[in-house]
Image (cartoon, rainbow, N blue to C red; front, side, top):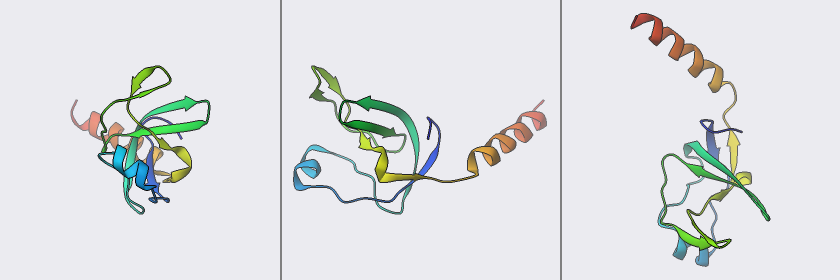
Length: 94
């Protein structure tokens, strides 16, 4: 997975503590675009274009909470299709 990848949420279960801290959460079965990937001591998290949460103190910084990358699966083959579509649109606008 990389920034810009379209993913599907495959795990939308959150603890009560997580639900209290998060304003927006991904929903199982919904699709999202990755806007940032962050590596932490406990694992890899992603931030999603469609969801924004307030900053919280973490690791001595103020960070937006991310979602474990394992909660998502990449939608295969769409990156190439999107690139081709963008090429077509660019050539038509020239």
